[in-house]
Image (cartoon, rainbow, N blue to C red; front, side, top):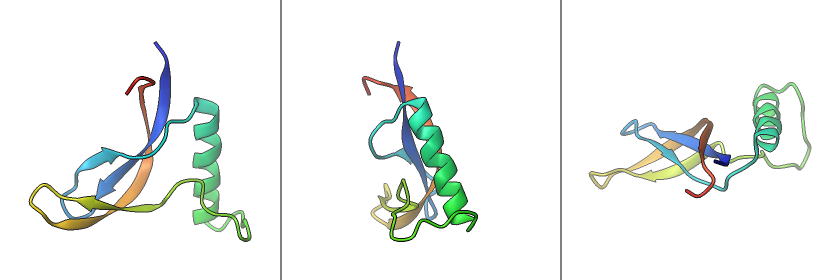
Length: 81
């Protein structure tokens, strides 16, 4: 069975966790995660370079509300999903 790592977000309004975005290999995911953490902490500055993942996304809550979701990590999923 083959796995990929997809970005995982958590809605601030309804607390739902959801996966959104393309899948990455483990080595690519680790590189993106380390770069994102270092940029967010100001340890490494990449001038004019975007974050390797979106730190925020919009979430459509089940009750019709719209929330802001934070990137919380990568989730390992089946490559077929």
